[in-house]
Image (cartoon, one colour):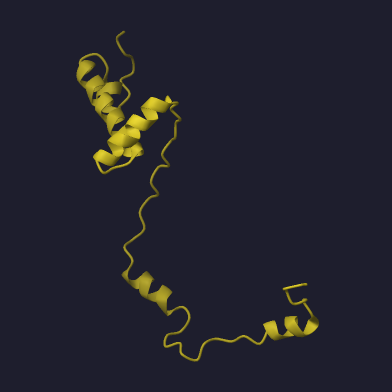
Length: 112
């Protein structure tokens, strides 16, 4: 038993009979023209963020998930905040020795 109708010449010919709705109140491109008139000027595209992968043990993954639920956030945001916190600690530790770490600018030569 075939549940689908066969594709026939009659079916294909009817496909071309479709037309625009008689209920349309605006021309087809009116929505685009409205957006162009009220849209802010375009800005430079943001730099695409880089991605890394961190392998976690089952316990670390579960702990991160529990922390995310308790803090009403995501695992990703907790990891992002932890990395930001670590970078701020490095900046404090190396502020006299390396501007690369302290303000993300190249210092031209770091002291070991």
